[in-house]
Length: 517
Image 1: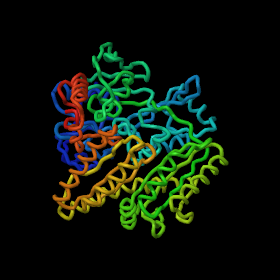
Image 2: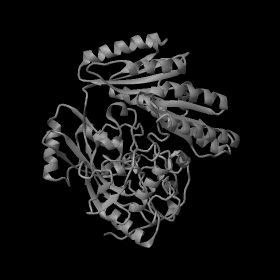
Image 3: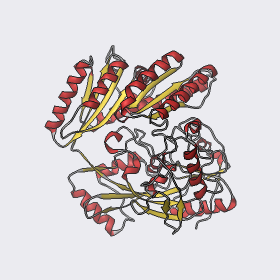
Image 4: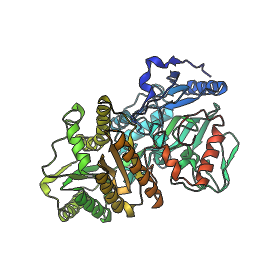
């Protein structure tokens, strides 16, 4: 095992925060480049009783990677694409280290070009097969934050705008290597270790006993119910029970054609009506890859920021007299089927009061990236406004929520969110993944009074999400920012989550300050 090389945090203060704007503390930091280094460092820190925070690219908005004390292990330099395999059914798996950036990964896959210097002969043969495959193959989770690392996406079990079709990141992870807090290195293949009603066998020959657990509306993977794969215990655990050292990603064949269409409407009510009608539509031979909603304030914020940011200047001016938008992606191999689906969308759009001139549509990758940039511009713009507010003398933690709701109540809850925001006199917006019931809420208080009102709103919305069968943490994790969500967990869920944490990390050294601690 490699001896720990520490750097004083004084020269690395940027690593004390993430995009949540929460600022933390640490004594030292290291940047390991291999599995041996990570395992050696973790074992040394564990033996010394030093708390450790595992970090990726720090693009999260829940503060999960913000340290509160001790040492930081930043995985961003641990970023090689290790190899590739192809199974007997023709499925491709790409093995990567956790620091690989999503944009780099998909760029390599699009070009089918990799540095194979250290690849095995088996990996090179698999790459040859990939290059002869006519289908475009990608790692499909698309959280819009292209600078996110694969390890960070897995640790928060990110979903993104294409989750309507492809689900969460963990769905596409076939195997992991993970170092648990005592320094042991485990290799876990999907399907090999699965929880039953009393617990789960483990790679080290031992067993974790967890009885009567059930899916939790708050704790997600930390409540390992029967049927949960051991891989999925680590997915979404936010680095609290282990450091993932490699991931085997199952690549997904994508449709030959993808169309993105941005529909602008006069108000959020019309956009809500249009999005709801799309959900009822039946498409033949076409996948509904994305269904995103933007209310008026979300569009207004992007419009403000694109005049200040070079990154957003590729976004055209929005059509006049429109105050909401719905973004749709259609994917498939049959161009005629996609054309038919687009015509049916135009009929629904017309019924909802839309005008054909108020749409953007394209199948070019550059334009699709611009549409996705517009979606990502909303949370990015929230960061900018909050930073400006801090410069003007008022700083607060990010006040946001990403409720996962049953699709049947999305309309009802959207109406409530918009009404509550209007009554609160706090600037706020609703946007995000309408298609699978995962709406994002952002509030931008300008002073302490507004901050108090904003916190009251997210508490009320969280309680309501749980009461209607959803969760207040659908995608971005809980971390440190959203620890108030603990109040909505039942006592059995709390007990199980603590038992899991205590089994893997009895000293409570890993990612201290996160929700289960």
